[in-house]
Amino acid sequence: MRMKEMVRRTRVHERLLRYYEQQGLLTPERLPSGYRVYGDADVETVRRIRHLLAAGLPTALIAQVLPCVSTDDERLVPTCPDLRAQLRREDERISRAIEDLQASRALLNTIIAAAPPPGRQESPGDNE
Image 1 (cartoon, rainbow, N blue to C red):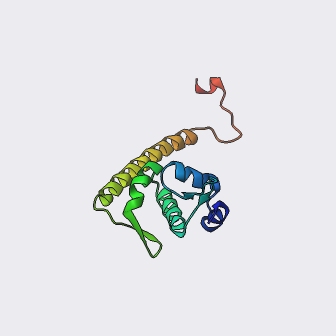
Image 2 (cartoon, rainbow, N blue to C red):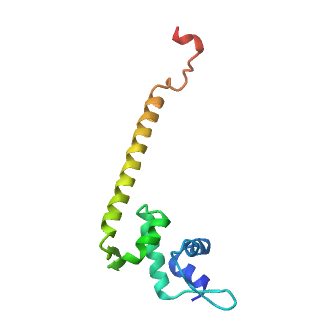
Image 3 (spheres, one colour):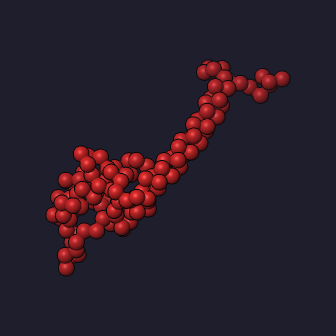
């Protein structure tokens, strides 16, 4: 299938398909004219890429993970022995990022709570 059909079937914009190709995640065949030709397996590959992206994995890691997952009833299943440990490390990285964001949010909320009520502007002499 050509690019337009691939876009229709995957609902992924052609720029993203080209990006996936640049990242080594997708390898469509090329006609002598340079046109890309995708197969049914490529549709499934794009679905897997989208799931892994939604799970928070960066494309560099997806390139490593992609050959090590299969699909079982719409869910991805690890097939390589080291993959579980690698995914656990990624889960820990995401958990740390969430904790950092929560700490930032708490600090921001403290600053917001310290603001004077709406309608009351604090003037420089109010604190004396």
